[in-house]
Amino acid sequence: MSPYIYWFLLSLGLVMLELVTGTFYMLVLALALGVGGFAALLGWSQSVQFTLSAVAGAIGILLLRRWRRGKAASAPSLNLDIGQPVQSVSWHQDGAVRALYRGAEWDAELESADTPREGIFYIKALRGSTLVLTHHKPNT
Image 1 (cartoon, rainbow, N blue to C red):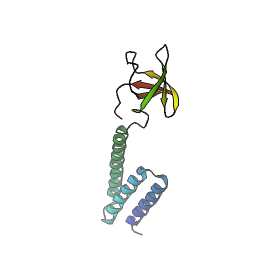
Image 2: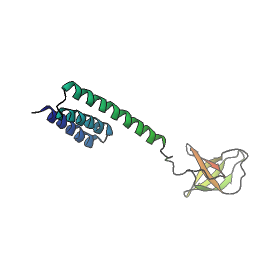
Image 3: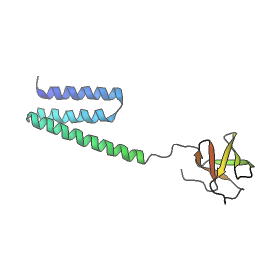
Image 4: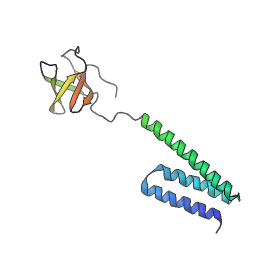
């Protein structure tokens, strides 16, 4: 068999492995093997085939890593409670509050000591199971 057939069979094998594992890295390596196969199809030497395949794989992995890093940095907060309004139920001497949220009473605290105790409160953050409340609706 011709060398390009081996390249394309290896590439096809990696595509099937990628379908099983669900990673994009196998797909990038499969494309790199495809580049080596096209070099073999064009009749270029074996050293050129391996070099082109290695360079295509390295560039593909670097681009994939950059794309995934940019995608992770722009991921929104997964906490759906932030920004939701709550009702205060009872105030304690130390400034803590019991708040009604989602049909249950929660321990809560104000974001700062000078926050007024009346009006509508919004969840700014969660510290364990304690809600941190503010008067300003946070941007989610």
